[in-house]
Amino acid sequence: MFRDRVDAGQKLAKKLEYLKGKDLIVVAIPRGGVVVGGEVARLLKVPLELIIPRKIGAPGNPELAIGAVISPNEVVINESLKRSLNVSDEYLKEVIEEETKEIERREKKYFGKHQPLEIQGKVLVLVDDGLATGYTALATIRALRKKKPKEIILAVPVAPKETISFLSKETDEIICLETPTFFYAVGQFYDDFSQTTDEEVIEILKKYKKEAED
Image (tube, rainbow, N blue to C red; front, side, top):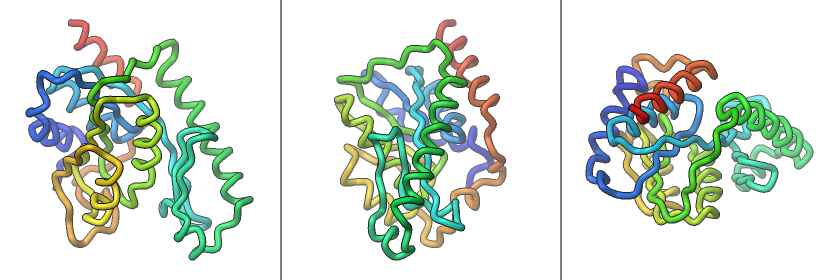
């Protein structure tokens, strides 16, 4: 159990101390993953970058991820779940368009004039506040692979064992602090899992940039 995302980030950073000295970039998934990733990057004293995937929720149950989108050309769908829920292509097209617009909105709000860091040849630590189905992380990992990093290490506080097993084929390494047998939602493993706002993400980025410059 974690007090909050800051606590989770600090505990995760301790597990990642062996990476100190490597050419490393922490890549965080907004929104909650930015709080965790910000702590990891701060404590390891490495750059912090963002990547913005969006979950594709099931019809009538948006919390159930049937896939994820990074851009119109970067979409991952759980085909077996799509078939079992009888999800139409028209529904997927509509949701992908909506989520792509949200990605664009967040990019403008978070990044402003910021130029993305060069990640080719770097060791990437991809951080979120936890995983459920893992499809958001999968889409993110596949998008990052195209940028030719040296390694991708997925680092999360909590995830189901089956999700870790599923994603281990896509990553060079996975660091997960807790893999509980009974898993219902990421939030059950936090005392405080209140929603992270856009403003908090921007504040973390500003604070991190200032500390890095100092």
